[in-house]
Length: 69
Image (cartoon, rainbow, N blue to C red):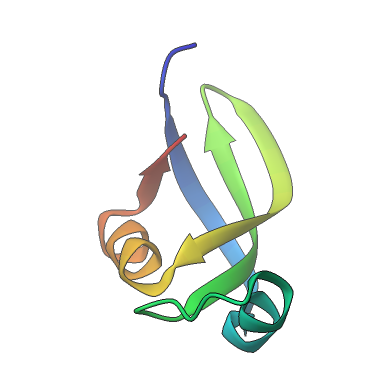
């Protein structure tokens, strides 16, 4: 499977799920975990989906305007 660019069209909501992750896994992550509701464009296919990102990965995706998946 190839990794493709997913261009962010709109961010609908961002929710910190770090505490839920800690309770479920018993593991305390080194950085916040975010659940992001967004619309993205991947080669003309526009999709609205909820994705999970580490905070640093999400900040980079916002800055660059896309994420790889």
